[in-house]
Length: 395
Image 1 (cartoon, rainbow, N blue to C red):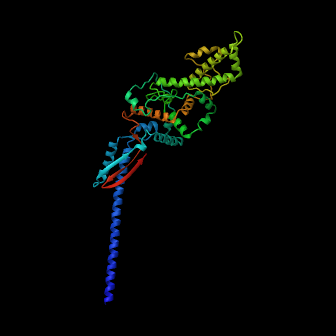
Image 2: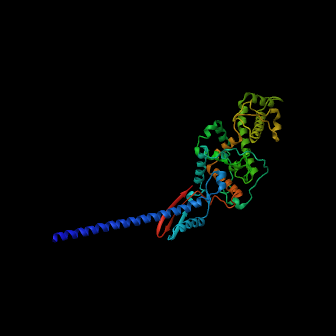
Image 3: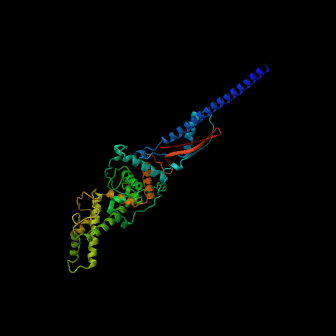
């Protein structure tokens, strides 16, 4: 009997231990489940709050430039996240909230470059609508546009720095094989093509932006529309002049005409011959640029067959008129802009592209928009009821 009682007692104790263990496990699982549910609700509420912020993207920036970004200060960000937390978690006590947008700040060149590259990749796949691929056309607006507002200029990402490519010899050597230029770096080519696609120029203007000559601004950085155009034009004339000098020397017929004019009054002196060649090459260069500005094309290097200016009519090209040689092949004005962009630093290009986006967004949609407050994502942490949670969302 004693043995049976001891066995029953042992069984009872073992059963109690097992039941207790099971109960503790069940309670732990219940608490873990509750914690996971609570954590999920907190994470979901945080994500909802951050996504609600990102959903308020700037529509002009998206429609005009294909970039998704919103601009809010830290106070607005914290208010939005707390609003969604308080609305979904009644017992939540938000002790500390830290939101960081710095790694997604649109003024960060790595961020804006990624946005541009992503847009161009999608665009090249034909995913964007047809409107985004159409030519901008040509407006009839004339006259100089000058940005004089000091506050607006001070807030520009570039801070108003001026520069333009000046190594004409380097460009001259490169454009002999235009295909090799674009093989240098794929990233730079995407940025350059984005600029050509999204910004106006002397020959391609839709009339909706502050500056007409936007790509010329990216190259020159002046606050005067006409000065930007003039700077690019001078460099273009200098480049074409250099090429044309080589053409005259290389083409026997052109060289013979120059020599004939130099020796018209007697034996030709080297100095007189050089002066005639330079004047003729410059006249042809100015004519080249006028053709380009009117939407025509110019061969990279010519022969006497494509040469437009007769040596006896050099004086006629210094007015507004020009001789159109009707070339079907060659480089257009935008092709030369591509060359100039290629020899402009990526930092300068991105800074000034952001300048134009900011100026046009302020003028067409949101007067208070700045790249310094715009971002494409958020990350951070929040302490609720003594526990820390992390969040990270981006477009």
